[in-house]
Length: 561
Ligand code: ATP
Ligand code: MG
Picture (cartoon, rainbow, N blue to C red):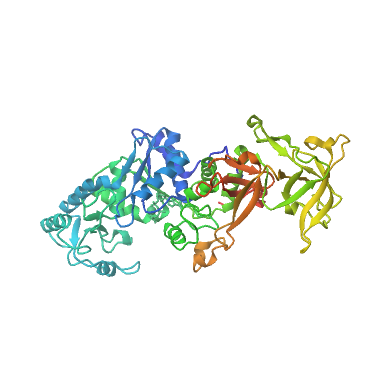
């Protein structure tokens, strides 16, 4: 497939939605929803679902609701609710006034349960959790009906009302749908609808001690909100017959459920449980560690919302299980940053250069472009002084054949400045290590051009020793060594020990001194960087590398889907 950022992939879901609009199947607006469970932070997989749900609403003039599926009080917190809201806002999606919580529907859901009982379609079961599992049977064996299945409507109503009032202990009884213990679909073998949990809920407090199962809350919440298209990931395909059964038995609004494949990324895990373990076991510093595939991590790393949305457009939506190369995400990041990042020079591994024929104390202000991709972005001045830093690997004492940068007797161009020639070296008397490189500069080559048109083969970046600012720079690599950490016996055993490298005394162009978090920079010839939004202070700057400047992947221009 050719990648073209302007070509919004039409997918099978958008086709269905379009058909439903054209055939007048939906009376009014298209209504979709994004239904996170507030038990973790959002990651790049959620971004795929966000872009699909909010994207379709935006493209069709519809609305997308944000609904927290907060039906499990033991795992969910207000902190997760807030971080999820913050991340979706940051991505730039807007739910207007349509912020909902499944917990606000607890009363309605309770009445749906009463309705099912009255219709003879649900019963209170006293079997234990383990017994229910044993009785359920397997794919090859039919289940066995519970001895409590034949309770009368009156008895069931009485018991269920008493379950609600808190009379029974946790786990003592459940409410189950009465469907078919011999169904080929295990989800249809009298699934549990309600259980007793004596825990405080982050929104409803102590009001409830019975909580609906996800499968009893999700479909009805969609129905209550008059969702037209309920888009889920593939694992819900086998649950669809149950949702259909409940909704039809209750006779309420029936959203159209369509399943699509989850996003998987190479070198990455996207299960909330595994991400939480990485945090707990301190493989990373937190959910927002720049190596994490969370939206908070990607944002701290320097990814822009535009890059993430562009990535989601390009990967498309299908039913087929697939794994996207993480290099595509990096490519989308790089493409956006190339457009917007402010160029400065930054030296990560500095070595000193002394310009012997440049006057001591003189500061010459040279002009550098802020962004060659956007000339409107203007210029900034860069101070040129007698002592400079260059990248230590831009110098070789005994240059190899194709080494065109600085070497004894060899001339190079300093970006935006002058041609310089290496004329000598200072060494540490004890170790022999090179501590400074002596050069002369040609004052006729200001701006990087020689009047006699002589050529140099290399251009290198530099900063002034006296004017540059010092910074810590954090360089990241994949968090996992293997492409498919999910397939490893233990994904923790293949965490990349070099996924973070810290460079302590980098020297950066002084124009970054007042830099704010959220500004993206390109350090020329090196990569894209941003100020770390947590650890950086005005006295001790910390930069994160978003990604290096080039990837071998970009050349191929194709990717697997
Ligand atoms: P859990 O196991 O806790 O349910 P989850 O990753 O499914 O984890 P949810 O909060 O239920 O988390 O997800 C919200 C929405 O995002 C759901 O509609 C879910 O299908 C979708 N989603 C989650 N992970 C991915 C993924 N990797 N790719 C695409 N969509 C995803
Ligand atoms: Mg889920």
